[in-house]
Length: 271
Image 1 (tube, one colour):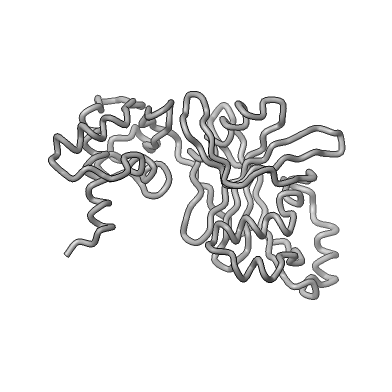
Image 2 (cartoon, rainbow, N blue to C red):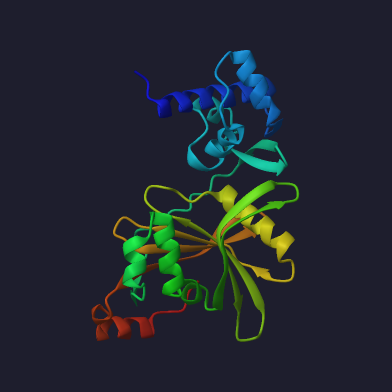
């Protein structure tokens, strides 16, 4: 018997493959479609209509890769992703792949853990736990070198030309010059992976909602040993790129030794 989850995945694959195949032309690098194309696909395929049409698109934007039949149609060296281009409007677009994954060869820095025990005990999931650790240990400040304050978590809004977007948390910061910053945060725990599309949307959100602030998107990821990898991303002429990476390990204060402190004192300052 096929489980409900497996059945939904198969149905979603059928729908997205149908939309892509009916709009794809040889050599194309972008293909536009509408949410109503999902309805047309369901009717033509004769399958059950998903209760949430938007979940079909969300699944392939953030949760799982596009089916192999679509991936193989990407131009050489590129991969297909889905971007929002307005309310209920989307685009398959071929882009250079960007893997936002921790480099296991990076050195880590020990940070005395300031997470309140009661918060650690009742955090409901990895993402929430990670956001709490970032906040209580001021890891955004430490990573960026800017004094930061949490403005809002799970900010959901609409952005012109994209549609609805959601950011895990938004920090506002100020540096020694008095310059103001906005830091959109994407936090991932467990087996979830960072998604370049979400970070691109964060940048677009900041440009629209905080145009006078310096936008510095941040991605944070739990590693297998519980350490936290943090990345700063930058929108370049070649697309989204990683401009900085650091690894932090939250420990009891007595675990930060004098030799650790001496090593940190002479460590070169790098992004």
